[in-house]
Each structure stands twice: as structure tokens, then as C-alpha cells.
Amino acid sequence: MDIDYAIRKPTPPITETSTPGVVDLYEKWERSNRLSVTFIKTNISAGIRGSVDHHDNVKDLLKAIDEKFTTSDKSLASTLIMQFSSLKLTWIKGVHDRIMRIRDIVAQLKALEVTMSDSFLVHYILCTLPHHYAPFKISYNTYKDKWSINELLTLCVQEEERLMMEEGEQVNLTTSFKKKKNQDNKKGKIPAQPIIKKESKCFFYKKKGHMKKDCLKFKNWLEKKRNLFSFVCYESNMTSINHNTWWIDSRSTIHVSNTLQGMQNLRKPMGSEQCIYSGSKMSSHVEAVGTCNLVLSSGFILNLEKTFYVPSFSKNLISISQLAPLGFSFKFMDSGFTLLNKSKVIGFGELRDGLYSINLQNNDAAYNSMHVSSRLKCCVMNEDSSMLWHRRLGHVSIDRIKRLVNDGVLSTLDFANFETCVDCIKGKQTNKSKKGAKRSSNILEIIHTYTLLQHTHFTSVL
Image 1 (tube, rainbow, N blue to C red):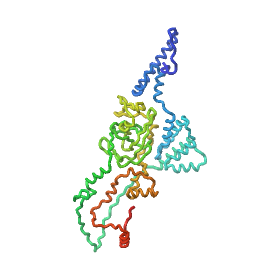
Image 2: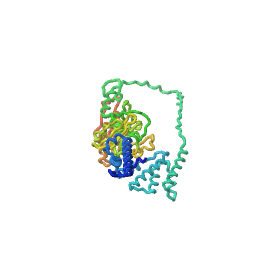
Image 3: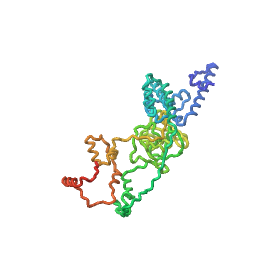
Image 4: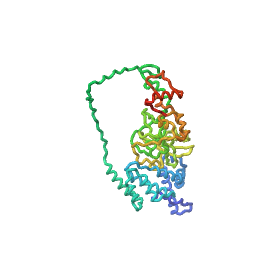
């Protein structure tokens, strides 16, 4: 029996005077239509089934579902171009999968009337190869003929096998040395004078027994001056999962990602963003902060601003408290949930292993996490930070930095993030204060001091 007969053929007209053949044809179409509608409704998720109006005709039902998931060719082309430019290869392995992924994206862009020549693709792939392939690039530049994509793919795979054979296995060698005993028994040595211990005094608490740098009250005062913030997120089911999935966390106060792939506008975390705390009160180090764009199953691009990159986390978390002020709302059900933006449905999710996971358009394409590397990654630093130049110039004062900016030595800096420097306060601590010291201020006194102490070594600080 043709189940899709009602999809391929229109509704046959039937009247009271219709022949038995026409009646049998109508019954065949009606049975196919009923089975098709039942099959579609039982196989789609509850969130989609509830958002689509009731239709008895299978063609009308398919048309209503298509209208819910209509995508724009322009937005799809922009997404594919972003994925094309963000593909990275940081190690020797994975060159075959990377080239095949690039060819797949180029084929999709060609269907959207965005074409790229084979010569451009060959040069682009060669330029983005890691430094291990430097001899391979030189051989291509000295070769007269041009390579096609298939030839480049074959030669890259051969070069990858050769590099892996040369790499071999690596082992770190560590050695230890025994310190030789001092056998210098020369006579006539002056015996060492006994060290007279002085009782230390805290200049902050004004009591003896400890120094200012070891004072607990002084450390608590410094912590309050820094205005630290505590970011809390709750994580469960600590198992090995796919890096392409994103999970909804109602107790998390921030967005968390465990990979840098697909993240943009990266910056180094500030003083109050360098550490977050999970539900078990264990701290995790934050390596970078950026923006992550997720393409949902409906084609809507969800921008997760201020996403924290924490490689020690096993799941990518989406904070409800961060999306709620932006006009987003969630409608949770038994088997899933619906994501709305200003009362408009933009995405769906399902319940898996006790947690809600959001559905993406294409996990491999919407959030590219190919070749996830556990190596150290560099964060992008804010070169316009006044606190950064304060440390670079040997902890100079803010007035000195402003003079350098006005004189054109430094570019325009951002003084909004200039806060109390704990290192400067600790560097000015002394064991004992000298109240009888006199500072020269007149010109003749300074010249006289320099003449008498011209052989004294000194250091100059900006």
C-alpha cells in the first residue's frame, strides 16, 4: 500500500453519482491521508506538535510545519562564512577531516550563489596549515604546476603520515644532582656573629608579634578593597559528553563553555572574573571571556554574551538568569521545553538524563568543536587597559601614565578599570619605619647631596 499516496496525489472529487472505481480511489486516498497525518503527529516532538494548528489534510499539515521553520538564505550564508573562517588546525592530525569539512561548506555556499574558485581554496588551505607543514608549503611554491583540491587532499594526507612517523614518541628526561659537601676547612676564618632576632610589629594593627604583610585584618581589608564577585554555577552528571551540546542550568549565574571553538571577541578575564565556584563550592579557573553564537533548530541565532571559557567543565551551560532580562522566556514540559523571545517561539529542547538540552540546527555546523585541543591557549589582552600599562611600566602612578598619554608616548587608554594595586601596597611595606629621615626639597640641597654621595649606587623609578 502506498502510504504517501495522499502526498503525491490531490484529493479525488466524489459525488453521489460517482462510479465504484472513483469511490475506491477516494477511499485509498483517505486511508493514506489518515495514516500520514497520524504518522507525522506521533513522530514529531511535543513542543512542535503543540505549536502547530490542527489540520486534517496531510499537505496542509506539512505546509504549516514548513512555515514554522522557514530560514533565510542570507542568514544561512553568513553562518556558513563564519564557520568557514573559524575552522582551525592546531596540530598535525586531522588535516583530512578539515579539508572535507571546508569542501562541504563551500558546496553549501555554492547552492546559495556564493562561489569560491578552486585556486582560492588551495591557497587558503595551505596558508592555514600549522607550522609543521612549512616544508610542504615551500615545495608547492617551487612547483610549477597548480594542484587541484583532490591532489592537495591526497598530498596532505601523505605529508601527515610522514610527520607522524618523524614525530614518534616523546619522553621528558629529568635528572637530579647531589649537592657536594663544603670541604673548605681553611683556618683563620672569622666566626659568624649570632643573629639577634628583633620582635616585629604590625603597622596596621599596631601590635607586636607579627608583621603587616602577615596581618589577617590587613589581608581582609585588601580583599574588601578589590570588590571581588562570586559567580556560582551548578553542574551535575560529570560524565564524558559531546562538546557540541548546550544545557540549560537554572542555578547558574553565567554562561560557561569548555572549548574556544566558535567563540568570538575573546579577552582576558578581569580580577573579579578569574575564578568561579560550582555547587560543591570548588573553584575553577577562567581562561578567557567572549561571545558565543548558537544557531538553534529554528534558524534563530542566540548570542551568549560574556561567556566564560572554563576547560575543566564537562558541559556547556546556558544561564536562565542571564537570558531572562533580555526578553527570553522558557516553557517547560514533561519531555522538553520551548524557548520564546517576546512571546515568539524561537527554539526547542528536550529532557536527557535529568537535564534539559537545547536543540541546535546542526551540532557540527552550528557550533564547531572539531579538533578540540587540551593544550594551553593564549587569551586576547586588552592593550588599552591602564592597569596593564601600570604593571608594564614598573607600577608607575596614574598621573605619570596620563602625562605619557598627553605627550603622545602612549595611545589613548581606558582608565575605568584602574583599581587599587595590591602589589604596590605590599611593595611599600617595611619592617621598621625611620621617622628621623629628612627629604631634600631645595635645589642647592639636592646638588649638595649629589656631590657628597656621587659614588653611592642608586636606582631610578619613573
